[in-house]
Amino acid sequence: MVAGSQPELLVVDSLEVVYAGVVRALRGVTMSVGTGQVVAVLGSNGAGKSTLLRTVSGTLGMHGGKVTAGALRFDGQDLAGRGAADIVRLGLVHVPEGRRIFGRLTVEENLRAGGMSVRGRAARTQARDRVYELFPLLAERRDSRAVLLSGGEQQMLAIGRGLMSAPRMLLLDEPSLGLAPQIIGKIGAAIREINAQGVSVVLVEQNAAMALALSEVAYVLELGRTSLSGPSAELAASDEVARRYLAVAGEAAPGAAPPAPGDPASPASPDPEPPRPASPARTLSRWQPSPARRLLPRPRGRVGAAADQGGVPAGEPK
Amino acid sequence: MTTFVSLLVNGISQGAVYALIALGFVIIFKASEVLNFAHGSMLFVGAYVTARLVPSIGFAAAVAIGVAGTALLAVVLERLLFSRVGRGTGLASQGQVAALTIMTLGLDIVIATDLTRRIGSRVLSLDQPWGTGAFSVGGVGLSYNRLIAMGTAAVLILAFLAAFRFTGWGVALRASAEDAEAAALMGIRHWQVSALAWLVAGGLAAVAAVFLTGSPTPGLDPSIRTVAFLAFPAAIIGGLDSTTGALAGGVLVGVVQSLIAGYAEHLQFLGGDFGGAVPYVLMLAVLLARPAGLFGTRELTRV
Image (cartoon, rainbow over the protein chains, first blue to last red):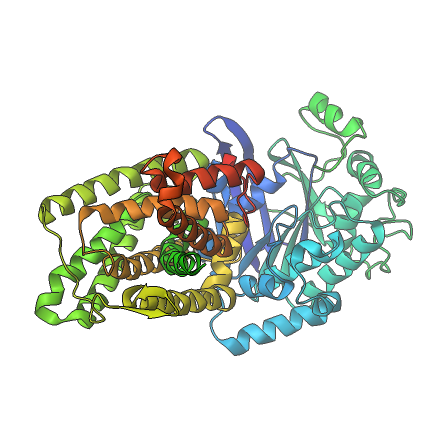
């Protein structure tokens, strides 16, 4: 058990992934996500965040990647060898980076595609209505081709499409990518609402300020390893994370000043929502992530590499 | 003028049949990214099965079995091609797609060679119940076979377009064709989408074959396979990934071919057999102006 009383829904255990037989993208990632939790995964470009999500959702093979070690379990079931379409049917949906909506299909058809694994017309209609309720903008544009939507609307469509199969867990890869701060706030509010409806969320972000404000627990990936992990509030308060990721996030979201360390949900943060009631303060010594490395006051190992990546403020989004 | 209208009508009716073939070719490409050069063999199989069954079980039942059999054969080919590629998902990488396309060419040769051996020098009749008659309205003549072909093609095309637009399979096929990975992330099982696309394409090819072997053609002989080589340029003219394009391309090829044949005596300078080359000349002209075809979105450099 991790993080109090929440049962583990997704367990990633010492995962190692290789692309094209030679490029090691993950070198031992361990994390767990409890039911109903929002977990953030932070890291710079190439840290392995997207690889992690692809592995979980079963699309790694389409990118020429292969799991060489470790295990993945969702709700107690081993995910190894399952295809992407089957994993969706388990209730685990991955909203990929870059939105990847079907541009030539209408908004309505995109949602229909998202609900393809759902049996029963009534269930599909209900899911669609819930998406339209969550994103009323989409309902207004239901007959437009998706390619004509704005970036923010496309992101809403991508998330809404992922919700059509009524998943228990949503993996979101960089939902704030390329969006204006105001829109990022709306997306953040939607993520909170989705979570409030009982969906666990894994939020992969370069926008660390947003991710830390939304999540309870965060993991930092660095060169394919879990380098830091802990309650988000504590990670946000640490100088280490603030220096390496929050400053970068401030650059990635123009107009939003990097929040001061120790105040992750300051009014200047890109998320205009009021700060959520402070999550029950857990001290580091009481919070025990299973085998993942814990929050460390100083960078450990690969100091040079970390400085190369974090020190340069050019963490521009892909 | 009457000659022109007559040639036009005959061209459209023949083009409607080409459109059925091109449509199958296009949906296979959309679903699998493979250019199915075995499409000619599918025509051949459909006509052969029908012709062999007609004497014993009658035309309607023979056509039903011929169409179903060809549709099934197409799915078997799809499973065969993709069994070792993409872990049975019906998806292949760019390099694999090229190899699979060559494999369809090989399959085409194998199937056609076998059927040619079986037919020998005979011309098999499918005994179409509408016979070899023709009718004429105001000097414009058309065989009943061509008339029924046009009507049947129109009905099938409309049914297909409706399915493509409104059914779950249609949405899944279009989603998969646009972004196969995102479609898989939506829980769309690509192999089902792909198998159904090949099934439909095989069925359409067999229906086309029934009309291609009717009047004014004397019956089934191995040359039926070459009709597919008219449908390929038709599909490319329209744009390989566009169903509308396949229809337009098919009709265009039919009409131009008919006109060239009809005015052959005025076109002596082009040589006697120019009609066979016309679809390809047309294709080159279209591709020079519009590299993605008339209605296509993807340029052929991707193939």
